[in-house]
Image 1 (cartoon, rainbow, N blue to C red):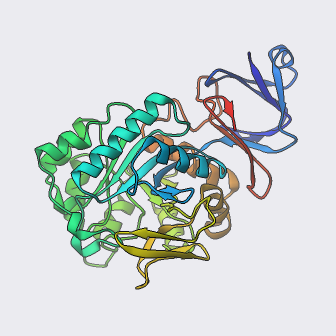
Image 2: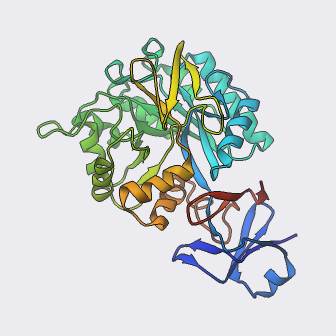
Image 3: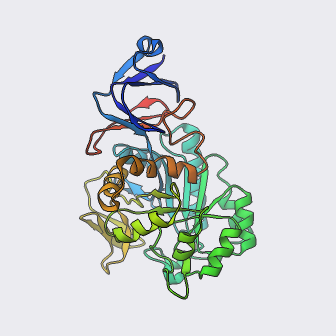
Length: 379
């Protein structure tokens, strides 16, 4: 049965358009046609009631949600709960993120993601391993006792998912260019983060296969006049992508606007770095034996160290418009098309076009989410 989504403002490559029907069969969009097209008239009709329809949001950094943290219980049930919590905010694809941990926990997390993908848990696109090959100097909330240099067994483990995408955040100064090339050769997407690397070390990593930067500006060497640092290398490099947390706490909006001005269009995308309080009522959770409290969207320990965020993707889109002074269309692409490109999924996700995944979000003028579809299935 074909489903026709009609009476909405559809975000196409040309911007928002009226008078269109998005035709879905199974997990795919089969056509974007005129609303009076014969195929739309013959289909099962879903009336969008004038709301906007965009590609579903893709979040590359999701530590938790729905009251649970991936590290605490790396299982299919945990992944299902996290994905369900974020779906209500328009996220239809995510990389559940494991914060630096021991090899056995990493192994369990990778197995859980592989099982979730095999079982068709909606929204799971792969895994993000944030560490443990990071810098003690820029550890943030990570447990530095978990940090280590990667060995041959680690390389095999990181590359073992088999299905979906694997993103690895690492400190370039902690991993040799040869190891970076080996990881990239296995299809692992490499990003720099929690790093004290110099500009030269970062440039060498980019040449060895580094593809992006995790939460730009946070937990990395800043741009200086004599030492451009990781931030300088990120802003200068035209080919790499930068994830940004637009919550008003992690980075000053002016710094983010500078990044947008420096990078080519499409190379900056939104992430949440979300923690368990997203989609849950309890504002506190435990991390590495510490109590983390979230107030007014800011998550921190007793010493004031940031510990992820309470941000959801719909709020990130709203913030991008209000804080970064960009059009809604661009903010939506930063939440869908651009992360899809970063993950190498731009031929299947992030657009409303024939042949693309029927991962969609319907929302009102205030970006309040009213409905989502993942692989053609409505929530």
